[in-house]
Image: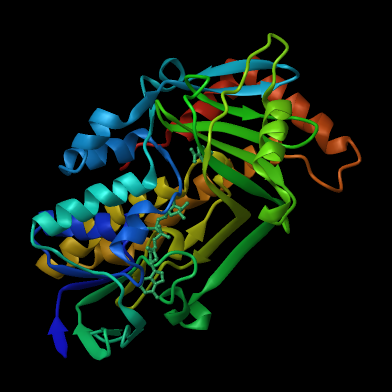
Length: 393
Ligand code: APR
Ligand code: PHB
């Protein structure tokens, strides 16, 4: 079976789905191919913080109604160390900008709904996806569905298939310059049916390791603990997780974390990764397919949105008028924002985690940096403007 489309998109995460939606609004047709089921991608628990610019984009693109209703607007975060909290106020430090707490899978639900309502093609549970001809003007995607083989002939392919996808592998070796760091720890995350016991996110620095208090709704708390990189979930029964969270998050004034049934549990590795370039011939990478940040800066989903905002404009220009300027500048335009986010995420990670081989030197630097960040308006402003994110150009 052979079909044709303008943009073949591999991956139905936030990057692939939003790209398809933005292209549709610009009058460009696409097909999205996803190897998982709709049910799976709509329930996969991932990131949860949206910067100001992605929120504004989702709203102006007509997919922000539920986000506006159910998203939790946060005007600051807390850095907690030495037994007390220190609030960083975003609007006063950034000219009125905020973040919104809204689960990544909710963004995915909204985008799938919008694509299907507009008659868009999002094909789930496809297998054996492969791409070729990216140096020609008619690149192809092959896949199987059921037992049948299919081919889509495209003008352009967008690789939005996440870190473990196949598209990045198609860049020729000499075009694929990878920069990478792994960290000597991981995050153990839980989702609990418990009312959040604080109104904003708490980033806690503690001698036993980092902890993060977050949430998804007025009924659901999201929590993370720094653990060893090779940690087994089996060695963390719920009681041990709660005990450790209480220890790392406690304050001198008796603040208490609410507990509740654990709905989800998982371990996330911590990695920084950037693939330069993000484009070759008619293949464009976006989101986790091109770069990964450690989650401490809450930047993963935001970078995915930022990439496809740039890509949708570049492809619209390319496919409507044949102009290549934006498409040729795609990597360079995105990588500027990507490296800012890579730096911020590395900086937050380095300031807040306990490093296994530290002789006390790094701890003293961390404590000095934390004290400085919460006492100097200049340092607090730098954290705040990076956290709420730069405006889209
Ligand atoms: N064929 C088809 N689909 C694939 C393939 C493949 N070979 N490989 C992966 N996929 C799908 C995955 O199942 C997933 O649904 O591609 C999608 C990629 O989506 P995400 O991993 O969510 O990546 P992205 O859209 O770039 O969003 C980045 O995800 O991991 C978080 O922190 C990250 O918040 C960030 C966001
Ligand atoms: C989350 O709510 O999942 C979350 C929040 C902030 C982070 C990382 C994850 O830095």
